[in-house]
Image (cartoon, rainbow, N blue to C red; front, side):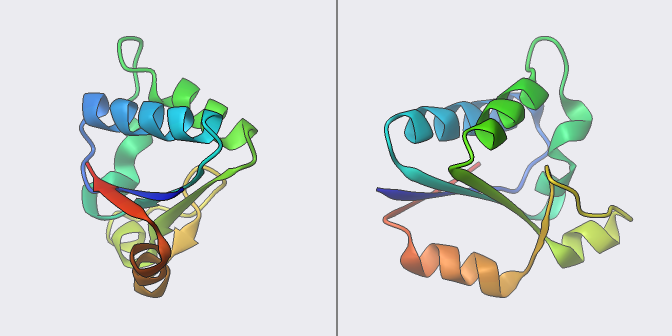
Length: 107
């Protein structure tokens, strides 16, 4: 299965759960793409001991099977630059995910 997860919040618990789901899907052999939009581009700012998002992201990226993309406009509005945990994408990439994935889940 090809799964798209869209994060539009900076809520630590929701983002932690989204990456937990992504990691479970990767471990089940699925292809997973996570797209960050709106407040979602700030997802790592609120990682802490109880909801260790960074640990989940590291696991996700270490698999080399998952992909993360972030809305370029949303990043610019927040004066953020892209990196490996928040690479730049755009509406075309989001549209492509939605149109080609078997399932789309939003958080």
